Amino acid sequence: MKILIATEKPFAPKAVAGIREVFDAAGYKVVLLEKYSDKSELLAAVADVDGLIIRSDKVTAEVLAAAEQLKIVVRAGAGYDNVDLAAASERGVVVMNTPGQNSNAVAELALGMMIYMSRNQFTPGTGFELQGKSVGIHAYGNVGRLVARKAKALGMEVMAYDPFVKDDAVFEADGVKKVESVEELYSNADFLSLHIPATAQTKGSIGYKLLMSMPKGATLVNTARKEVIDECGLQAALSERTDLKYVTDIAPDSAEELAKIAGKRFF
Image (cartoon, rainbow, N blue to C red):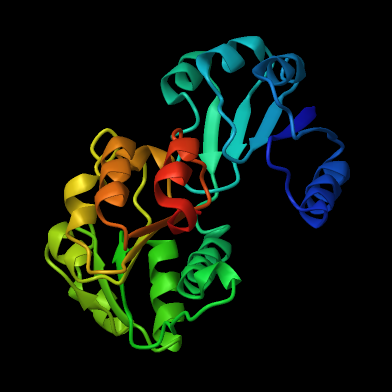
């Protein structure tokens, strides 16, 4: 059995070593494809592998067709939106993910981004503290709950919206205010931490109207998916509202244009 770890953005060396140890013990061969820049490299690498481990790398129908021996794809992360599930099912390839595996890392990143933006990206000048500021959490899953708990520890006022979490006790257990609409969430959040998946319903759903409703000086923090952002609406909002800020770890398609419009308000 041959296992390919294909990560455009590599795992930490310690993680790779741990994966190797497990597969070596099972008698499987592990090969790496890291920091690749062209899809052709992935197509060539999957030609003779039985298993594939990825992060946010795209496993399209073309990739699956090139991997004639492939039996399983495992995504290190939540969601399956970067894998063509229909094509995988047609070829009999099992697809799995690891929900919660990197939740704490993402939650820490979200809070780190809030601190970074509140302190003027650590450049000279007067910033402000997070304590006493409000944070809205859009989607209250594994990551959202961790963000809430960490934000509470910093003295922030935390509210959340998730129409799929019906039990109010989930919010109450964390001391979080449940709001009844996405409009209410955005219009009251100094910081908005976004954790919704990219689905047919959510793609492009965060745009001009919601952003323009946010309080003066508000910041949208996106550690979810770039596809959920209506980038034209984002550009328009940042252009009209010079107090708004947007920070993300997923490069938007219009990153260059956003940088021109927003300068240090976009990171």
